[in-house]
Amino acid sequence: HTTDPSEEGDTINLDKSHGAGRLIPLPNGGWVHAHCAVWSSEVWETPNGGYLNDVHKARGRSAKLKCFGCGRSGATLGCHKGNCVKNYHYVCARACGVVFMENHKLYCSDHRAYAKDALRTDFSEPMKSLKIGGKNDKKLNTGQCLRLGSLVVHSLGKIQKDIDGFHNRYYIMPPGYTSTRIFWSFVKPKTRTLYLMKIERSSLNMPLFLVTAADAPSMTFQSEDVQKVYAEVMGKVWEMNKNFFSHGDLFSVFPMQRSRKQGRNAFCLNGPQFWGFGIDNVRKHLESLSDAVVCAVPLTEKSTPYRFCFRNPTENAVTDLQRKRAALEAEKALENSSGCARTEGMSAVDKSTSSGRITRALVGKGDQDQTSPTKSGANVREVLNDSSKQNFESNQAKYKEMKKYPMEQRLAAKRSHIHGWGLFAKRKFPKHSMIAEYMGETIGQTIADKREKKYEILGMGSCYMFRLDWHNIVDATNIGCMARFMNHCCAANAYAKVITVNTSLGLEKKIVVFANQDIEQGDEITYDYKFPVEDGSLRCTCGAPNCIGRMN
Image (cartoon, rainbow, N blue to C red):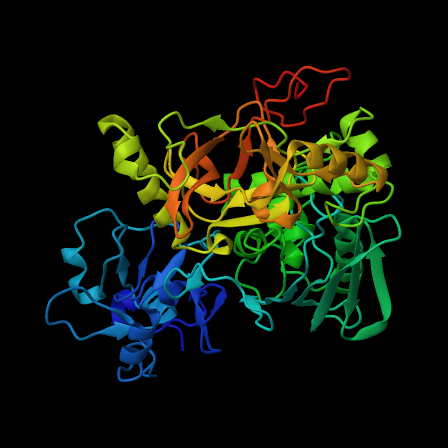
């Protein structure tokens, strides 16, 4: 029956009713119309996120209420007039003359006089991303699917760390990305089918897009251009369904006709959006992948970095990636790279230093602590004055505090962008705090000279000797700790100092590395080697702003 609601109250004119909008998936597997959710009194939308909250409350209330228009359950749109018990479905509310306002209040036909604010006149589909439930920033776990309407993302794929071809300025397209979408078939008219799209790695190390329809499994569309694959599918859909398009009827169950205006894509989507990786919600998950930072740091000057929109990589992540890449390039440049700092041959030393001389990590001597006692085993109170005593006790307390924690909890040896292995902080170190003790085998000058020649004959790329005083040298080449991996830097954040501490063996001299500034977790600890000027300069690769290009 068709009647005028203004004359016969709340009788629905089904021929003139308007659609309730697209279907939005619920977390529990159900569906809800966009307009029904947006206009429910309990539902509220986040200002910028497009998330509809408290939809479950509206669904719970609707199970107990019947629509005053059609008499069926599921009504969630209630009149905002106090004591009014009328509730409607969205379609029924439009047909029964309910007044909708811009502030998302609505009044039934009996109380439309209370609608004094601006009325809503535009009821078109909200062209933005909508998601049911509170804002959820959790990453998509392995095995989970991401559903957005008729699109389902089954796998986000894996970011390629050594190739730049799987992303551009706007999209990330990792190999293994798999999605399906329900859309019109090109085999049978007026019929929907499931399309499967998967990204694989082509022979040219570029993304290869493969599309297969469920009702035509023997036909596969493939191309390195996603827009080309999308255009081929849309072209076949158009040929099969060109006589069944809506032809301007916005409320028809058939799709709209392809727009012929220049610059506009068919069906309001482009290729990346149609297959998912161009939609904001999917892009957010792609940017959350563990190796997504590689998309922001191009491998070559010709590479195009991806512009992150939702989850910008941290500065530390970018720095770590650059260090890893620099270390990898250094390893590739070495003929006999073995992964061990002590087994790299002399050819590696020649390439890394541009000099025939052996690379020695810490051959210089640290600053002597002028306040340290000089008589081994002497009573401290007899040797030191008040000022010296205060400094000695301060160093003694710092040394005991440092020794409380194992070195593995404070420091780590990792590949460095400066050279080979480097020493990195695993926690924060305040300025002038003790970082580590340089430990090794204490030998004399004569033995040190013989060992240096022996290391050079054996082809050991590095030896680690540190002068303790005029007579003794600490050799950590074969017996030592990870402090020997400290690299040289022209803007060093640490310095070495020889101090005297009271141990179980009495007063002993120790080589201790101090923080020259506040050192953050993850920073590489560097030291000025203080090499003397000799024949043949040693090239410096620290990359500091004040780097002079050599270490001596």
